[in-house]
Image 1 (cartoon, rainbow, N blue to C red):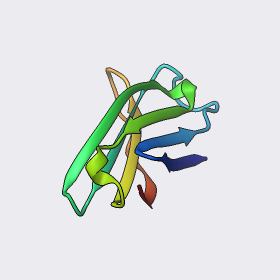
Image 2 (tube, one colour):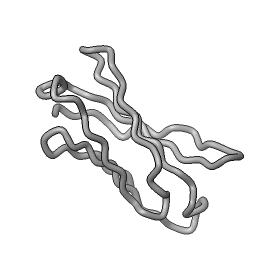
Image 3 (cartoon, rainbow, N blue to C red):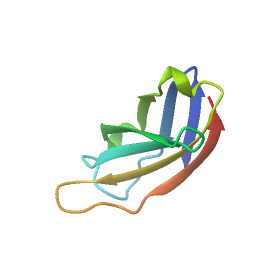
Image 4 (cartoon, rainbow, N blue to C red):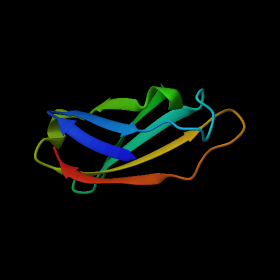
Length: 88
């Protein structure tokens, strides 16, 4: 399954890597703060790692954010998955 948590301004997305996809696919985490109309992106984690961490700006503390994740490689990208929302 997919997970999305915050500890301070460190936002972490987690997933279970199974028999689908390629473990060397790169993961992209996109976090959006609607109140500030700003987006922060983290890239580079491998699908096989099961986790990616993003440091949100300090100005986002007490703000609600929404997170999306997708994977891909040089040839193809997955559709995005909504991870949910939380308040930092």
